[in-house]
Amino acid sequence: MSWTESHGFSMFGQYNLTLLDVDKAWLNITNLADRTLWVYELSKDCFGCPYTLCRDEDQVPFQVQPGASLQFTASTKFATKYRLEERGDPETILENDTGNLYCKTETNMGEFGVYELLVENKECKFQTLLEPVSIYLPFLIPFFFYLCLGIAVFILNKYKSAICNAIGLGKKSTRTENPLGVSVNSESNKSEPAIPSPPRQRLRSLDTFRGICIVIMIFVNDGGAGYYFLEHATWDGLYVADLVFPWFLWIMGVCIPVSIKSQVKRNTPKLTILRRIIIRSLKLIAIGVILNSKGGPIEFNKLRLPGVLQRFGICYFVAATSVLICANKDFVNNRKAVCTRDQ
Image (tube, rainbow, N blue to C red; front, side):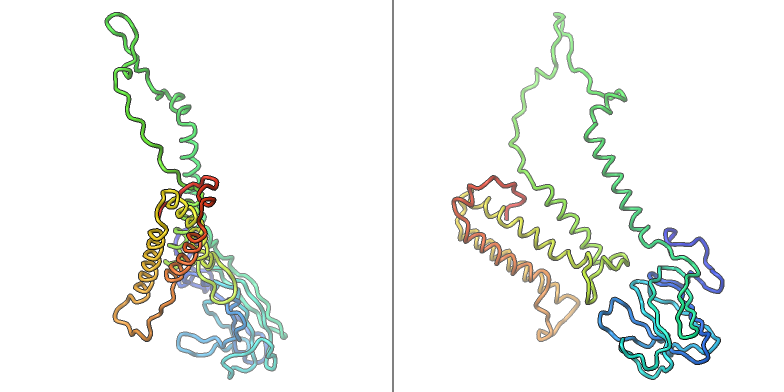
């Protein structure tokens, strides 16, 4: 538990907060009814799933005797529905099955919080005993740090001359006096350097967007730092991680016509361009298959051929070939495009 996600104390009553993992909270169920009840739960992330009987690490079902309490660590990653049943023999219960239902409730608990569920008179009353911590603070601190750093760099670059002049670091004059008393610029004696050719312009907005996608992809591949929106949706929903693949496809689609236009403008034969397209597509597919086969010896009948890079390769081949076929004089002489990278 880091300092950004700590309450500042390890114990809250009888609850040991140091035993909580990421996306966990303490939940206490107090049974004030006159009968034994069994605890069922359903995560809202599981769309259309039935309620499942809660069990501990030893696979013992959660049951609460009359007048007793039950404490356990509950998941806070998604909102959870709880229902108390008068029977605990079915392992799963459908949403519309109310034959043995005593009460039910829906909770939206926070990380490292302490909560209580009071069961009495056919009602489930949920209350917060200890407020949760802010799970977004470790995410916001570096975000605002780099945001402020970027603003500072932008200001320094934009007003660099004014700042240097204000603190006395302005450029000194290079004019000197010769023996005849005539002021001469020392730089005039130097030979004029050759004017370099202007660098190829890049589409900075596309490069920036590509960099953002790469950063998000790294977070997703490394577990998303525990944030659910940096992971793929289990079944129903759309999170940031689900957008990375179509974003990269969109970037590739923007680059294809620009690159092909640049090659056609240089009078590169279309067969040569087509050969490059085929080679790049095959490379993407081959790398994808290799990545799917990593981890040791595999059985070819169980080798998974589809994959992210394989789809990139197929989409690139179809799109690039279509653009190449449609490329003509009007396509090349159209409004000057800003090249990002030649293939």
